[in-house]
Image 1 (cartoon, rainbow, N blue to C red):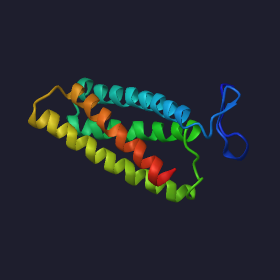
Image 2: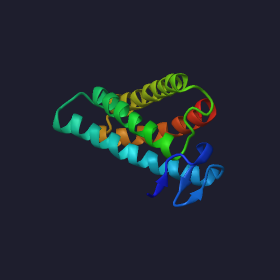
Image 3: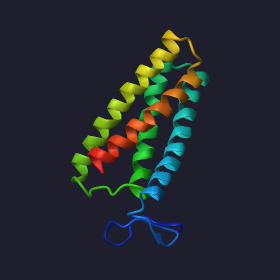
Image 4: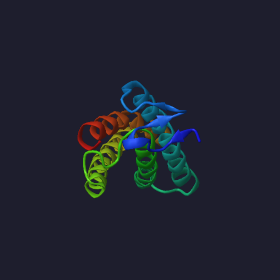
Length: 145
């Protein structure tokens, strides 16, 4: 298997190498997971907004929520140590709080880009996601994991 999801004592192992304390590797994995979550989010947004005609703000919220669940799961497997700082219930509450703030920022940016500047909804979604990724990483690293 490519990754031992949790090595001994919560260590992170990938391709037989322990990268638990290697911040560069963890950041690169976080960015790769973020890229996968972004593709999921953009794909969901595109389908909801373009194919099904869902309002761009509602589509953005639904896509963000779905990709956040995927991102949380993959982040716990490859980057963060779930339960290391808080019990899982409190951790999930904090993730929900941080994600809600990220969603608020995402929707606010979408409203500015589409509603005020009249930018294309898909391009606005990509721009908003690129900005919110910094909030997500820094807040999860500082307050949750």
